[in-house]
Structures are given as C-alpha cells and as structure tokens.
Image 1 (cartoon, rainbow, N blue to C red):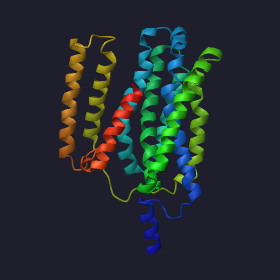
Image 2: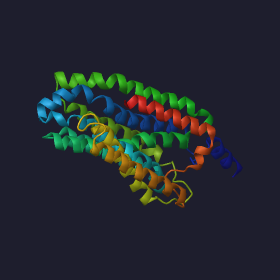
Image 3: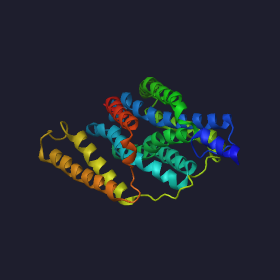
Image 4: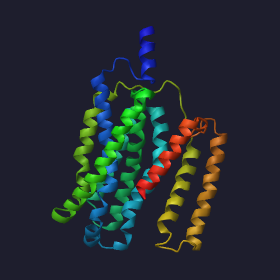
Length: 297
C-alpha cells in the first residue's frame, strides 16, 4: 500500500504504478505525433494556397482556409481538458484525432472552396484537442520537476512542423497535387492511434467527479468566434473602424464579460481562476500567450 502511494506521489499524477517506462514513452511519442499533425496543418497549407485558389476558384475566400481552422481550434481547445477529466484521456484524444482525420478527408475531397473551408473548420475542432490533450497527458505522466524536459520536445515538434510544413506544402502543390497536404494526415493519424492504443488504457480517469460547465463553454466559444471574426475581417473585408468590425468587437467584449461572471459564480467553472493566483503559473501563462500570439501572427 505504501509503495503504491509512493509511486503515485513520485509521478505526481493518477497514473497506474504498473505502467512501465517504455509504455510511458510510447504514450508520449504517440501524443507528440498527434500534436505534430495539428502543428503541421498550420504550416503546410500556406504555400499551397495559390494553387488551391486556381483549382477551386473563389480566391477571395482563401484566407478562410486558415481562419476556419484557427477559429474552431481556438474555441474548442479549452473544452477538451475538462471533457477528458470526465470521460478519461483515451476516448477523448481518440475522438480529437478522428475529428481531425474526418476534416482532413473532407478537405482532400473538397470539390469547391466552401467544402474545403468546412473541412478545415472540422479539422480545427479536432486539432484544438490535440494541442490541449498532448500537454494534459504529458502532465499526467511526468512529475512537475521533469516537465521542462518534455516541454523541449513539444517545442521541437513545432520546430519540425515550421520547417517541414512549408517544404511539403510547396512540393505537393507544385509537383504533385494540393490534396496530398490533407491525405498525408490519414496515415500519420492512424499511426499515432496505434502507438498509444494499448498503453493509454492504463491511464485512469481522474477519481474526482467532474461536471462540464455547458453555459460557460457556450459563452467562451461565442466570445472567441466573434473576436476572431473581427480580427479576420478588419482591414480586409471591412475597414477597421467600420460598424461591422466594431460591432463584432463590442459583442465579443460583452460575451467575454459574461464568461468572466460565469467563472466567478459557477460551482465548477470551465477555467479555474484560482490557479492564476500562483505567480509562477501566471507568469508562464502570460508568456505562453504572448509566444503563441507571435507564432500565429
């Protein structure tokens, strides 16, 4: 009994003490491959956009191929962690991968620009989960003092995607076919699922019973979507100080305020504000926010 407690304390998580080091490494490798899928999809598309515009027409909607992905990925990412607390990591990360692969399939077979944008939005709904759950699973497996080492692996995954994505996207679009930038996700996604299938079964559902704040989730998705629409349309579709853009910003601010009120009043809020009272967590969160803003920009 004491040995079991010691093992779990050492891990700093709810991971089963029977999980071997090779199984942990297999899980981490699999989830990093899943993250590579989502990261690659943010960099591989841009070089192929001119070719896609010529093939499908309606080139004025090309920005939505990128924006559609970012919109759903940003809005859905915070939901996956809470959902996985309720239903367990394995089924939720599997669902994220399958949603991502479904979006890839729709995008690869798209006969026109509208279907391609819809496919990209579906991809984003899964890709947001891959970003969040990769770090969640690593947090379950690795004690806090060792997580910086794995954060370097996450950074390396993004570095690989930032270099390989444009090269692959340009090569596929120029010498083969633009749809290959989406077809390539299917074998990689199934490989990731095969790698993590067996060892991830040993990662248990958190013992505490959790509830999903549905109202908070809706407010977060609406506020995020309105803000991203304003940022996307401002300066391109509409002038920055047009009624349409200012109206979207104002509506987003209202929903962000409602979301903040919900966080303060909900019994189990979607995002815990208490954790930000830790100055280390607060500084890390702000730094990551600025880093991602620069990266996406």
